[in-house]
Image: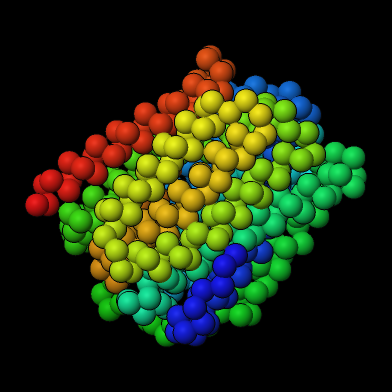
Length: 396
C-alpha cells in the first residue's frame, strides 16, 4: 500500500488508527472463511450457485439492516464503543461454527451470527470515525480506516491459500485458524480505544421517531438513494470467487484473486478518500461507476485467469473510489447527534438492495451463465449513472 504523506497521517487521531487496525484483524479472520466459503458450500456441501447467492444476499442484507437499530441505539445512549465491542465479539464467536458445520444449516446459522455482529458494530464504528475525525480530514479518516480494513481483506485470503496448500484443501482446519485474529480484534478494541467524552443527550428520545427523522435533510436522503443504487450495481463478492474458479483457477489458489482485488482496494482507498476532501463528490461517484462498468464488462468476457484478474483489479479501484466517499457523504449530510441512525438507515437501504442484487445475480448465473451476471451489473451501473446526471441537472 503506498505510503501517504506523513504530515497528513500525523493529523489523524490515534482512535482512527485503532479502529482501522481492529477492522484489519477482523477482516483477516472473516476473509479466511469467506474467501473459501462459496467453494466449501458448492463442492463439499453440494449447494447450487442460486442457493449461494440467496445465502450471501440474506447474510449481507441482515448485517446492513441490523445497523439501523444499533446506530439508533448508539445515538440514544450517547455511547458507541460498547456496541462495537459486542458486534466484533459476535463475529469472533461465529468462526468455530463454520469449522464444525455438518451441513448447510449450521453454515447459514454461523453466517447470520457473523453478519448480525457486523451489523451491530458497523454504524456505531462509522459514527465513531465521524465523531473522532476533524471535519477537514473526514474523507482521509474514512479512507484510512477503509484502507486498513482492506489490508485485512487481502491478507485473510492470502493466509487461506497458504493453509489450503499446506493442509491439502482442508477447509475446516483453515476455519479454525480464523478464530485467532478475530479474538485479537475484540481485545484491541476493548483495551485500545478511548471513546470521546460524551453523555446521554438531555431529554433523549427514540432517534427513529418521525420528528427526529425529519431532521435528516433531502441531501442526506439523496445519499441514501444513490448508495442503494450502487449496491444494486455491485452484488456479493461470492460471485467473484466463483467466477475465478469457473475460469480455470485451481481451487486452492482461488482466494488469491480476492487478494489481488483487495490489494488494489487497500492501495486506492486512502488516496481517493483524501481526494474526496478536495473534489466534487458527484464527479468522483461518476468516475467510480465508469470503472465498475469496465470491471463488469471485462469479467463478463474473460476466458482465463488473466482476464479475471484484470476485472477484479478494476473492481478494487471502484471500491476504493466509492466506499469511503459514500460514508463521508453520510457524515457530512447528517446532524452530529443522529450520525449512528443516519449510517444505520443508509445501510438498511443498502441491505435491501444487496439481497435483491445477489438473488438476481445468482438467478442470472444459473439460467444464462456467468457472463449474464456481470452484464446485468453493468446495466444497473448505467441506470445509476443516469440518476446521477439527472440529479446534477436538478442542482444547476
